[in-house]
Amino acid sequence: MQHPYEKIPLNTAGFVLAAFIIGLHLWMLLKQDDAIDYLQKFSRNYVAGVIFMTIGLIWFWLIVMPKGYNPIQMELNDFNKAKPLLLIIVPVGGYFVITQMKEFLAVRGLGLVCLMAAAPLLAAAWQEPHPCKFLIPLYAYAMIIKGILWVSMPYMFRDAVSWATATKGRFKMLTIGGLSYGVAVLVCSFAFWG
Image: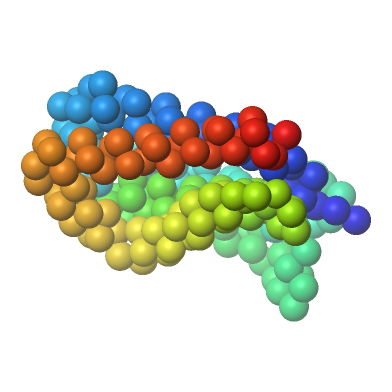
């Protein structure tokens, strides 16, 4: 039986991804000063940390729930026996992470959401024959790498933001690059993946 992630059409995944990328980069391009200020302060934004961490933990918790309780639960093969334990550890551990690990919580939460969001993107592109479908897995794998780094070494986000915002020209160039990627995904969603 197919997992719900595997039923996501490639063009739908493309439209959602393109909307996210284009929206984010348009904001960064049109409100450059506000975007730079927000990104530089994001690492210490505790409210954003609570929101992202909560979303990521609930998403993971839904995936490890036993079969039949929700549509997105996944088989963990050799780790299926650990599911009852994970159902307890995830909320308890999440509570302690949110209340006790306040340093870089926003980056860790964003990293967790990136890890969780990569799965539906990869599933949508799995075994699809369409041209340029690599745009979605490429972005998803970048999310996975960033997610792992941000969860385990959150200071790397701060360092990357410092480098990207060192000059307005560099920030604008990176923003235009990201916007172009989003437009390419949108074009492919209409032209090839429909």
